[in-house]
Amino acid sequence: MGRVFAVTLEGRIYTCKHCGTHLALSNDIVSKSFQCRHGKAYLFSKVVNVTNGEIEERQMMTGAHTVADIFCVQCGEIVGWKYVGFYVLDAT
Image 1 (cartoon, rainbow, N blue to C red):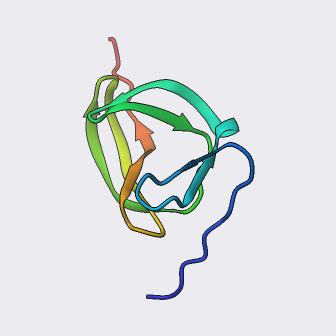
Image 2 (image 1 turned 90 degrees about the horizontal axis):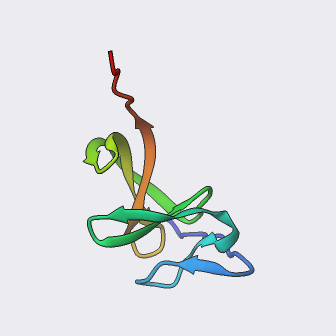
């Protein structure tokens, strides 16, 4: 495996709780009103220094969504997930 080159952000930032790698700017928060199985979750419009996991379908409180876990590029720990797609149920 090669050397990891991480992006350094400036300003108010969110970091990996395991290793401190920069992940997102506070200005990139879209919503703080998300819940996940581990508690409170934030929705960001943009993140850096992550790699994508396998795409899978998950049943969430708002319905079925296609998501992929995201991992810190530095330590490899899971830091969240990203939406890949979603389904809208037809009411007819």
